[in-house]
Image 1 (cartoon, one colour):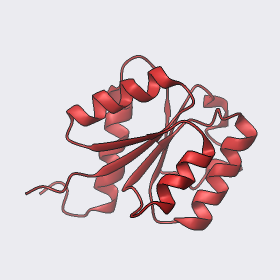
Image 2 (cartoon, rainbow, N blue to C red; image 1 turned 180 degrees about the vertical axis):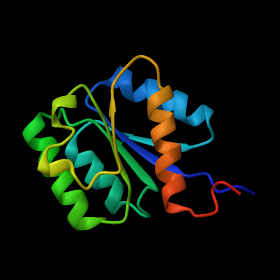
Image 3 (tube, rainbow, N blue to C red; image 1 turned 120 degrees about the horizontal axis):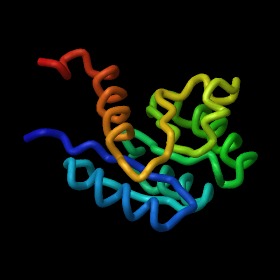
Image 4 (tube, helix red, strand yellow; image 1 turned 90 degrees about the vertical axis):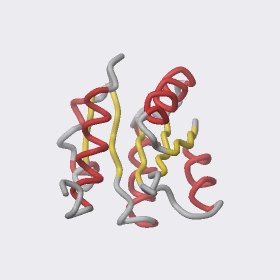
Length: 128
């Protein structure tokens, strides 16, 4: 049986969380959601960490950068995909370690491709 990867989607917008949960679940992922920074860390403390975190930087932005710093210090091996409207921060020094940076849109295709690419980069046998 194929492992169902667990994703944590962190976004302050309830509609975005519900949309991504529906779209990513349809692709076979287990999807958990978080609205606020505190909820992200509650999820991380509640058991095993997710296989990948998808988050927006808008928590507001200063908090988003702090969340990234804390995530990196707590879980440096858990991949992070930034899904945001703040594309001007794609090359900012505080996000250089993230695995992918995807612009928010109404079409989840680019996000799904980024998630698959990130998982593939961690699994040398993904193309087998």
